[in-house]
Length: 116
Image (tube, rainbow, N blue to C red):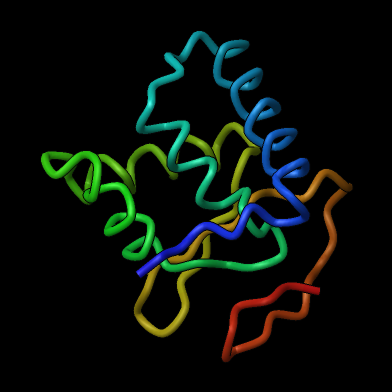
């Protein structure tokens, strides 16, 4: 189950959430409570990939009617807007908050998903 840590005291999380909100609004997309929770989940530790199923379980605590397809579709849209990065790992889709820098490659820990 996904638990939010408020990485670095929540300051970074708030900045990343606000940045994502600006991107969505600039692209004429609604900023909903569900989308905010999705962004908060990945912004909580922008150095790691997390399983989308964990985000799904986290969101369903407050929104039990929210479908996995809706969550996946939103993450796909966020990826197209440059907000998140998606990858397939061990038959699981994973997501992380997108880096700000120019195109580059990462080393990714197979155990914890940490990105360097």
